[in-house]
Amino acid sequence: MKAIELKMPDEVYRKLESLASHDHQQVDAFALRKLEELVRAVGDFAELERRAQRGSQEKFRAAMAKVPNGVPMPGDELPEN
View (tube, helix red, strand yellow):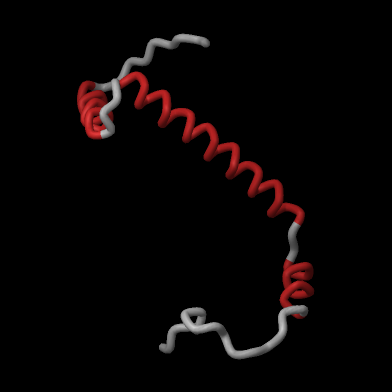
């Protein structure tokens, strides 16, 4: 495991400390968990962007053409204007 030294404004640290205490964690453990979540989210977004590049309006319309017309299930109705 690598260690880093991170300098941040006092106000940011106080907020981080408060969030960590609400989660009953030490600041470093809380910050590590949040950084891990951020790294995963960035990777997930990059994957979505890669997948979006493979899509097209033509493919979307072809897929939607396969959906049968019918009455939506209760709760799936479009809102009325």
